[in-house]
Length: 203
Length: 178
Image (cartoon, rainbow over all chains, first blue to last red; front, side, top):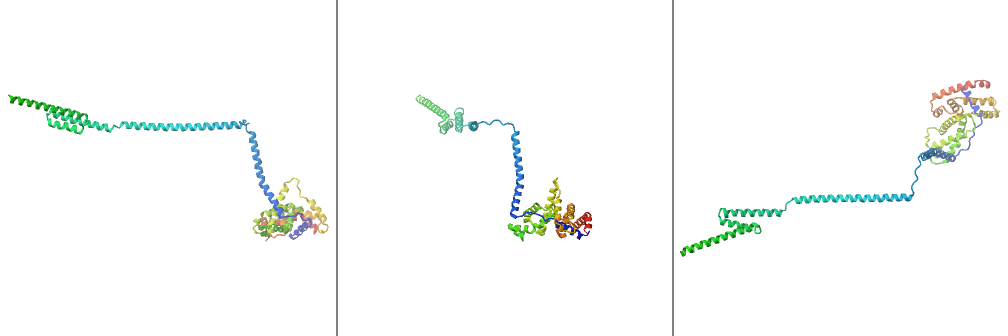
């Protein structure tokens, strides 16, 4: 059997069959079908996911232990208010503690500064002490001149120097007493010498 | 030209494409599916796919070849779907009855034509497709190769084997007619 014979046979058999039947095809109808099909393609997974989620949610809800009855809203509000008040009180107490601690720190610092200041000596007293010491030394030297060395003139100058430099000092008063004593001795001595001159002249 | 018009949003261009190619597409589907006559579902599917994909049609081949390729794929899918149905059996009775009405066929009677069609249907899909495309659709070798995605050698091998099988099955019939 040749190829051409097979071709003829097939074509005859095809022609002997009834022609194919198909309906009218319109672009608009096809577009609508296409849209529906896309919608179904998109919608199916979304619906399946939604159903799964719903099932899972229901299962979770039912498998969970019975939750205790919720308190009434008024009680909740009251409790919330109490919590808020406690919070405010706690904040205030904490602030007070902070303030007290800060004050204590300031007082401690002040006390330390005062102690440091107290340890420092008064400069006026120190000067007065030094002045008194100098006046004493001058009076002491003058006394030595007067009593031990019998240098009355130098001693008088020394006493007068103490009185001139430190007139308010107590050693200035001692110097004045010494000068008065020297003057008294001089007067007595001059009186004694005058009596002896008069007596020898009368004799 | 029609494709360009369709791409620019002219739906009437697609209607023109359907008018021009629907009969050929239906004939091819009818032959590939074993002459069931009612091929409306497959033709609708073919043009639905064409509508969805026409904007990406690159124009590497003729629109007719492109539509035939879609038809080929849709028919394969249709046959697979039918073969999964346990109650499905290709209805030969209808074809036979149709043939019986064509009494003017003198050389071979209706039963003989039905036998030829049964033989074609009984071929393995890859042989049946090349037989239909080559001898019934009258397509060129290059066009068939492009549609099936095979080389010329492969096509020739398939055609030779298909002819041999047809010859073996229809040998007695050929002797009777000659």
